[in-house]
Structure formats: structure tokens, C-alpha cells
Amino acid sequence: MNIVSAEFVRSITELNRCPDGGRPEVALAGRSNVGKSSLLNCLVNRRNLARTSNTPGRTRTINFYLINKRFYLVDLPGYGYARVPEKVRLNWGPLIEGYLSHRPELRGVVQIVDLRHPPTAQDVQLYQWLKHHHLPAVVVATKADKLSRSQGLQQLQVVRQTLGLVEEDRLIKFSARTREGRDELWRVIEDWVG
Ligand code: GTP
Ligand code: MG
Image (cartoon, rainbow, N blue to C red; front, top):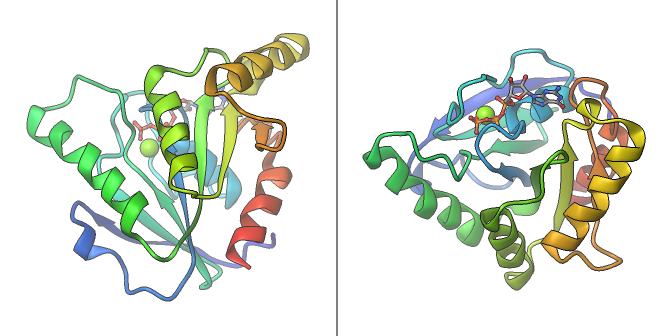
């Protein structure tokens, strides 16, 4: 994908604040601090378009980024991080679930997990949920640069097994640092956004 433009459009905490429809959307979902915003920046060749941080729970809103004036990449808040104010936390589940279940523009979901660790119970739950709702999904196992090649391949099997992926389910080994997996992920996204 040739990135001509990538612009932040808006952050929302309520579903009725989504941008006007009509353009396809691809969402990035995953546990807090897993590397969603870094993956988005890597995809669009920008260092700081989406804010990244060592502090888990940085992205608390749904953030829309318009790519090539044609489709949106949608950065979802991370799940599974407890140390945020109760009021904020309570709003996440329904917000994410509401977006994933009621957004007609949504063409597919990039579910991001950490290659170094087995997927969490919530990762498994999300993947099963996506399947159940027939939402096209690709699993991206990120931070591959932190493992050796053989460890990485081994962990890929752990991810496959824990999430219960079948043969035809797509799983991509990725690193925002080395850009491994970037082209492969773009091919999936391009396919979704037409
Ligand atoms: P929240 O918005 O808090 O849910 O986090 P996030 O999922 O958007 O994660 P973010 O992109 O902010 O990254 C979290 C931390 O992981 C940052 O310190 C990143 O630099 C680091 N990180 C993300 N991707 C990679 C990667 O591929 N390799 C390495 N080595 N570090 C990464
Ligand atoms: Mg983020």
C-alpha cells in the first residue's frame, strides 16, 4: 500500500460520535500496552501519529485515522488493564463491544497479541467473539524482535493453539521495530477495504 496521507480525524467515547459513514474501517484490537498504536504508526510510516507509551492504558478512546482519504484505521482502547479509574474502565467493554457489533463500515479486525506470551483469557474471548459474529479477523503476534527466530516460531504455535486457530485462520508474525510482517498485514487490510 502506498501511503499518500494519514491523518488523525477524531477520538470518541460514545458510539454516536463515529465519523460519518461511507468509508470502510479496519479496527485494531488487543490488550493494553500490546503495541496497537505502534503497529498503526508502522503501517502508515509515521513515528508518532498514534500516541504510544510505556504506560498501559494510554489509548482510552476510539481513535479514527483516515488513510489516503479512502478508509479508516481505528485504534481501539486496550483491554485487560485494571489500574485505571473505575469510571473509565467500565466504559471500555461496552464501547469496544458496541463498536465491533454495530458498525456497518467495519470490514475486519486486526487482533494483536504479544508473541512472547501465551494469549490471555481475554484475548481468547475476543477471538472467539469475532468468529461467533462472523467478523473477518487476522491475528498479529507482535514484538517479534524481542525473540530469536526459533523462539518466535515456537511461540507462534503457542498463539495458534491457545486461541484455537484452525488451518485457514490467518496469523502474522510482526514487529513494529523491524517492520517484519508489515507487507503481509497490508495485503490483508487492502483486501478488506477494497
Ligand atoms: P495502549 O494504548 O495503552 O492500549 O497500548 P498500545 O497497545 O497502543 O501499545 P503501544 O503501541 O503504546 O506500545 C506499548 C509499548 O510497547 C511501547 O513502549 C512500545 O515502544 C512497545 N512496542 C510496541 N510494539 C513493539 C515492537 O514491535 N517491538 C518492541 N520491541 N517494542 C514494541
Ligand atoms: Mg495505544
